[in-house]
Length: 520
Image 1: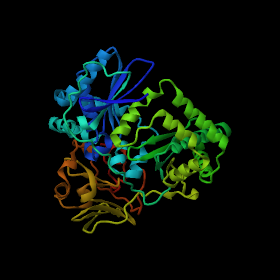
Image 2: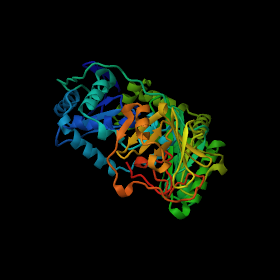
Image 3: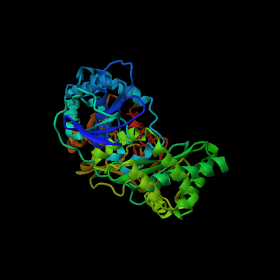
Image 4: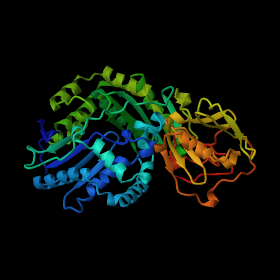
């Protein structure tokens, strides 16, 4: 059912379909490759590459994900040839005169994007790097110029880093993929900033979110289906606590997969939903699963694999597998593996996911009572260096060292070392926000600490200049001024300690009481 060939050196996958021909060109590049100071560059290249196609009477689009970027369309063979050749030619000669217009479009798109229920979990697990970047704003687009996007396209959108897939019985005649040579780019290794799991953190109102990591295996997809069924039964049908309850299984690209689960909650039932959610997880931990439940989800999965269009529907995922080094399995192999899964396999998958779990609970909720450790919200130490006390008497201290900066309030510390700084937001008035690879952030306004006038210049010289992002001037009314305030000895989550740039909830923002930074 699956046929492999190549077009101009690009590996090509074909599978039959009962509907119109659909084709896609997938590249092994995404958010995990960008770095915090360049988030958005792949998305920007994608938009520029599609501009010349203009308005069409058929469906086409592009999509930038965590590890791959797709260009795809549905139409006649002639339409597909025109579209794919246009994409390749545009990647080789991006319409950079459209750069500022496409940046504005991306800002508008971001403003209307919800981010998904699990937006916060990647950054809390991975920090401001690689897989954690999917939760951060597209900080990089404002400073990107024509040379930046051209260089990115030339390095990543290449023949060796691409796979073509087509739902049809042949490659459309005359198709040429004029892509430059290159290399197949490996998926970066996943990091974690969680010292211990399972862990939890306090997120936003609206529900409970959980994810966990496991070795990629069909048992994980069955576990996700069983988890969704049990959350729905327990929290909606029996408890009447939630309306929406869902779970998913998503291969990550590095031989691992992520199982994510969600249950919504109205404010007055948030505590009960946390308790019910944790009870469901605990049931799987002790192996409270039955053969009948396994058979039910297995039948559901088998029905999807037997659908006439299942071979074509698998093509985008198979393209990603080919680019990330995963073995391509036939439908017969998948079905054989599906029926080989035992209750013990599902329990093992559950233990992997739950043992690596990260739980997001609503405000005013906790999960330490259920064995979840609190995810770190502060640094373990401060850098050695010169200490400057807050001039407003708040008790906060700024420490400027040779290898980084810290802000200390009582026993709480927020530290970013220059060698592990992911991005610096630089305001013209000298304020700086440093965000470390671990997601911890420090806001520095020298005037509030009586620090030297050249503090900002010292910070800028100490980090890689490519990660310093110039920010627009602040409204004078928004620039913090020292004001009397008592020392608290803690890092409040609300009030005078503002949300970090872009609203990223993983970072810990530290600023003396009396001032606040505007969102980036």
